[in-house]
Length: 108
Ligand code: FES
Image (cartoon, rainbow, N blue to C red; front, side):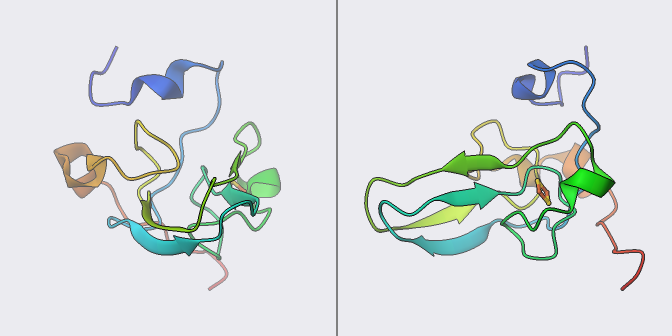
């Protein structure tokens, strides 16, 4: 098993690997009690949040839905390989992310 790949990626069977839309996290002001959907596949055009693109571009991957308890400013993962989704854990600084190509939308 490749130790560079976060362990939570192995919890389900055979999902596609996410693409990397950003090699930096997104600073986001969250509203307590509001429901959010963090994009886990990397294909959304509304990063770091899901826009439904996973249904066509990454079947098998789902957004991570969460509700913060209180208003807060957080760093949400942009490389989609964090071990603490939806939050950045610094994984974007690792070599395997640095060497990956940034995702480009095909119809951009
Ligand atoms: S678009 Fe990426 S999880 Fe929905």
